Image (cartoon, rainbow, N blue to C red):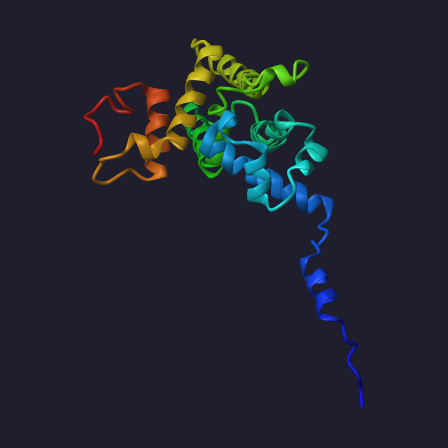
Length: 230
């Protein structure tokens, strides 16, 4: 006959209430996910560390242990992942693309399609970034400006575009062209619900990317200078 170890009722209650200690990486991941979601929904100023911790199911003190302060959490949850996304995007182009190996239309289309897909997939991250209009810079005087999250990736995209334009004899200003195209793609990827509100048959992502490509390469007249496609 076997006997079960008996635990007094009061001890069982204590054991049930005792929090399970989670690995540091798990806690950090929970905080980053909750921070990204709440920053996107409420903006930097509107999302408190207390709310973020409660959403993540952890003690608020762990935010300060892992990230130092709210600014550090925002950088880790939003700014750095955005930079990494754009850096990876440019890295993939620079690693695989052979200069002037595609037509201008095909190159622009591939660039816009890939950028649009990436931004649409990570729209929550981008909304959190562009919605942080009350970034608490005074608590991080030595940190980069929030706008610098765009600066380095755009500079890299500009260098890539400048090389291609020079090789093709194109005369547009790459500094403006890259940022105008980037801004158009970003807004269409993130704000498509607003832009196509009320449209009976909203266009597919493929259609949106193709039309943006035609607009950049051919202008509003389109590739054949013909009537507007339905």
